Image (cartoon, rainbow over all chains, first blue to last red; front, side):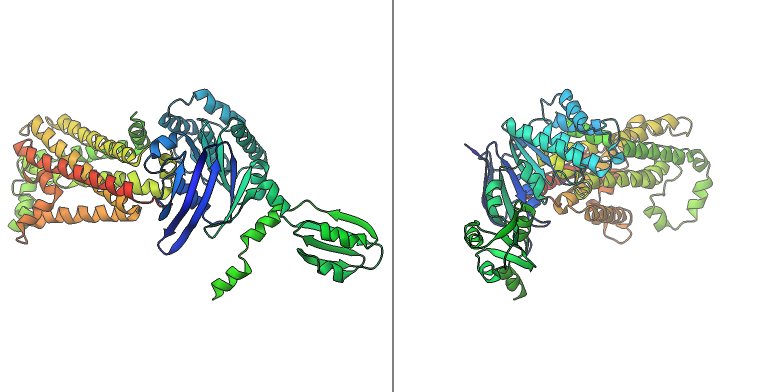
Length: 304
Length: 262
């Protein structure tokens, strides 16, 4: 299958400030890709490079195998873009704004705009300035999805949306996926990406620090255990388990997190009397935080 | 598909209407004073001025219709408002909309930067044309009652075309500064400073013995050869048009080369 997005050692520096550092990434056709990272990690920089709003310092980006700058106009026909903060001239009416944007592309039927507006409960007759932030974001959603683009580039698409509309948004993404459209979606919220993404990339400080399927990331996530023993607790055996952390012992109950397969744990438990065992769902949000936080080594480096 | 052009004009309809009607009204108001001036009241007042000042203010021939309109209406007040319109509009074209965050969305659509800039320059030129056209219509409307018949319709038209080009030129200066820097403040301040300096250069160049300086001023090509007396000054109009063309080419090249500010 053809790669829709292909980044090779893509680097962007703003003066002395680093935006992106030698980013390699490929997103396949039909894939929903979640692009995660804290604010300022380089998510928007990547997206603005893809859209030719800014130009790389070095390295290269390819969309549908073509250069984003050289083929900007023809590529943009195939792309729907939504910024996290959707900004348009607030004096115009919603319908007027959407018709204008639709006219910049050909073949967007009026009925499609009305259908999307109805699904999102968006009034086309009011002026943009009368809309709340969430409702303004709906205008952005309509313009990004209305022409059924081959590639959707969504930069923090759900910011300001209420939970109900977030669900509608996720439905729209699922429909796009079902129709074979590719989705590149940035976010700093794991759960919304988890719900729809095939693969997730985590970016921090302009570098890609994790790239995997949601399922495999979940496997590597720390599972939380809460085990109550009937007999005495062999704390020493527990502390030597590989991948264990946050061990607390409260009477007959031990609580800890485990970042590896639980085989060794089971071996330890087999030698004890266990009254109850609870293992919680791996917490992706927590995994996400471990990637977000600067590593000890990085902290040392920044101190030096 | 000229919809960027029409949309730009449509979005600016309120400011354009305001400026055009305002300029025409102020222009006719001043033109309406001409009969009193011709009757000598103003002439006596100006006689009290020193010859240097009279020359600077272009008031040596205040009693004739062309002299009066050339020094007051078309010499100061109308070009002032028109240039302000041009600078305000030109600032918004790139830098203003860019800082407001509107350009990201437009340029993520199938619209090249060149097309966006050219359409918006065209909208500026049309807006300037509408403003100057309304001034012309207003002048022709008061021409009989304000005793301005010594100026022909063609001479009024010549001055109005020069006005439209002057207005477009200052808009193009603001567009170019905005296209190079992406800064609204730089576009506004830069073009306003150029406006003040070149107006001063045209007005006071001969007083400070630097007559050639006025050839650097757009105001010289706008009114220096007195279209109200001499009709169309094709060379001057050509220089204004060529300058606009050069600025648009520069702006396009610069805008295509740089990163958009976020």
